[in-house]
Length: 209
Image (cartoon, rainbow, N blue to C red; front, side, top):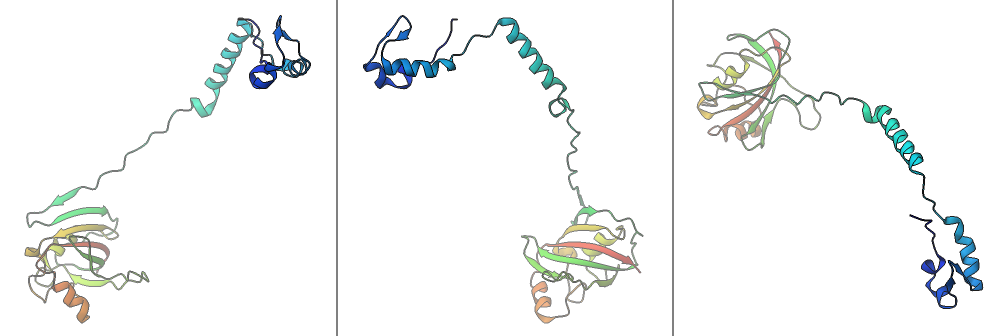
């Protein structure tokens, strides 16, 4: 390819009407001035050797640049929360495995809990939803005193642990004397009104007494 020149007639078509180009140079006064101004924009072809050297140098720079050449860090996928289904129909998910003493049947334990319906609607909790203050309950791990499904959730938990469980009504509030149950009339009535449906309990074991 020869020299590539940007001609003024391409940028200013109106100037080409009053002048013509002969022999590669314009003969009009205005066109001559424009030609002189834009002649400095002439792009010359680079020699083949120079071009190859420039390409080689650019690729070398990219190769040693740590932003491009650094190995990608290993990304670990989050572990899925497994669900354990008991013979009673209770389904348990281990959210946090505690590191303290393990609760056994017959123990007395202190815990916080949140109770929801299976569709997620809030029923009752020992933790205030607005202030965040908690009023933990103390329960014996005895199915004659607390709902059987919750006892099954708590047995085997370690202090500091958190579990989420779906408790079917057959091992839930089969009578009104089973704990945990709110002392206030309104929350108590609300909880018992859902006694015939599955309930979700999220529990945090605080102490084994």
